[in-house]
Image (cartoon, rainbow, N blue to C red; front, side, top):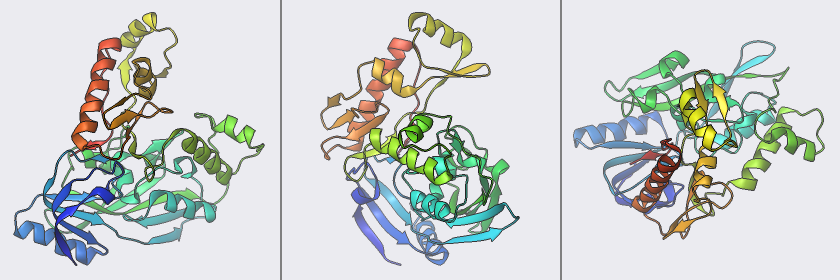
Length: 339
């Protein structure tokens, strides 16, 4: 294993922010990972593990050791006539993994097509889109306990999944490294979810009357590509903010002044699209210096010139949070991990 010093992370984060890691190692096996972790322990170095770098914003150079987890491999175990367990290593590209499952006609992940990042970070965020979340098909994940250096298995209950949240972002933050994830997928009698977003209308425009899971994936890809910038072309981390859930009483007060506010009731709370709130505050398509809110989706912040620093992007997001709070009394929360 090769440990580099003063290593640029520009190619390892989808914002394309140029910061340096004091030490950097790309690991391809559990043995190399243990070697890297031991190296950090012996030198008392801070440790950061990177997957695809798709949900992180670096605001400064990093001291300590950054590990880029590149574990690869996919395996299967048929458990019934209609279900299969599929396990993917943490370094597998998420969309590549979804495509693998679709080629096998395994259903359950099709609505999560084209989400950037790697498999290993999917449980951390409980990634979700178009009515589907990781927790819907998640069985367990194997993790490395950084204190004991032993491999453990966490089920769904231990992971404490919430909206873009999990145990790994709260109590378990910085204590475990996800090595692989196992999903329970259907091999037949697929449950087709088309009632969320614009999937149904996109399928209609494609002339698809009886959609397969492959058709749903194609529709999701078309929708995402029509409104979300490609990180390889324009640096971004997808949705920068979470959609806020506000108490029903607070929402009704806001609705009096803004009758057309989109909303999704959830018991005693109401979820409001963050993108709509941001757009109403005049940020959609607006650029300040090197940073902008994307012209097609206000929820996505972009490195408009390619030269933005992480601090610039953070400051831009802070201005958005402040303006939404001033106008609606609703405080947005960043979905992206700030480092």
